Image (cartoon, helix red, strand yellow):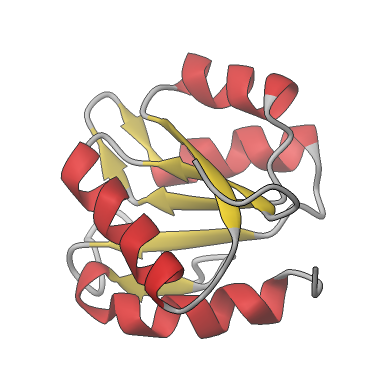
Amino acid sequence: MGAPGGWRILIVDDSRDDAELTEIALREAGLRFDARRASTAQEVREALAAFAPQLVISDMNLPGFSGEEARALVRAHDPALPFVFLTGSLYPPETPPDFGAPLLTKDDLADLPGLVRGLLPEL
């Protein structure tokens, strides 16, 4: 998927198109990475164990699964693992005011590469 030696990024999103747009935004900014996509709790658990991501980018709302649940799984696996929320709306009604992780709207993907660079060490 990405260049060898790049970061490992797990994208938690039920929309293949949205996950691809996230990857495109990062690649167009010149970031080197391998990406995996997960859309269920089980897939997140498996990716954390087998893929060992260095960053998780998660949609806030997935069918039968939420970004909050994804973050809880990530924190249980590794409390220090960087985590970013993406959402289609700025303030989903079921989300508390303190998101506990950086939040970007999917309309602001141009801001994602800078955020990622700030969260991950240089390669």
